[in-house]
Image (cartoon, rainbow, N blue to C red; front, side, top):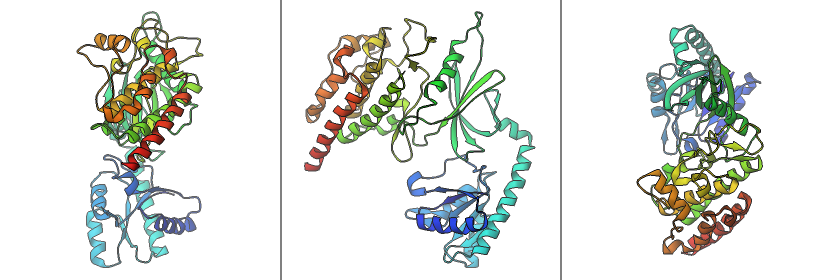
Amino acid sequence: MRVLLVDDDPRFRALLRHHLTCTWSEAQIDSYDPLARGPIPRGFLAQAYDVVVLDHAWPGGDGFAWLADLGSREGFAPVVFVAPDDTPAVAEAARRAGAFAVVSGQKVDHEKLTSAVRAAASRQAEARAAWRGAVAAREQQTFAGAYLPGYRRLRRIAGGSVSELFLAESLLGGNLVVLKVTRDLRRADGVDQSFGRFLQEYELIRGIRHPHVVRLFDLGVTDDFAYLVMEYFARGDLRAQMTGPLAPSRALGFALEIATALDAIHHAGILHRDLKPGNVMVRDDGSLALIDFGLAKHRALELEITDKGLIFGTPHYMSPEQGHGQPTDGRSDLYSLGVVLYELLTARKPFDADNPMAIIYQHAKAPVPRLPAAQQALQPLLDRLLAKRPEDRYASARSAIEAIERQLEDARRAELAA
């Protein structure tokens, strides 16, 4: 038995969990707090669950509205609705909104709850069997030509010459994931650098377990495709938080989380080489996670997949040495961190021009721009991160973390005193 409990009250969730585990001792019960996580993402059908138990209300939230939304999603798991009372009118309204069964939350009746859950699970088992045998099931599990059973395609997110990204529902994990799919296209010389770099991306970070680095769930190869399954971020990337200049404490807090991610990957021998706001994602709890290691490089690899002398990355965030195709190390990622921090503080990039080469030139030759007067206390930090020569920057991400922590403490004190 696998159940998704949707309610904000941990005590009530614990009560429901107790009722369910008394009957199904091995039940897997996952909690979904609507206050912390917001609405259930559009397209999600909870197909990994036997039943969804949904409460009628929470502060600022209407369970009946949620029920109507979930009930309108064709193929959504059966919903057992916990009504505010046991009056027939309330139960009828819930059923019209899409509830499979209704129980009262005033005093939870064990037999009624477990009977409703058992019946819902039976209905879900029938629905799953029917879906697996339908023609649409194979089409919904096909991603850019790759048939990947166990994942249901919701929508295509983006695509390029090498890979395509899809939002999908894991039919085993019960969560939304991002699938990155690439085709193995062999060149005349038998070497497909893009495919090799795709596989290397997983090898680089599969062993890293860090709160500010994206979680990778799976890598697979099927026919002429490889696919990577990774964490999905419903709140988008860091750029969505940059609607204007941020308070120094908030900007430094973000920079600190990114720096700790860089410290983790650098200790694993990995250079990111494409740090920018679009590659820093926001989790439901507001914390950040570094993603997209497609251009990353491991210092210890014997095979260098990236052609020497070629420039990879995003010009606005490139270090001078990276922009000129010179050797890079961890200090190049710290330069990109400095660019991101400047943008967080000012809502503009430190260097800009009409063409990429002009931007690359400015990174190498133009003076580091000055922060506004109110942020002058942070100028030494920016000057060090954005130093033209790697040897003039912080020697490591750990050194940068210590400097950012000091500035963050000062910024918080100043904001409290203001």
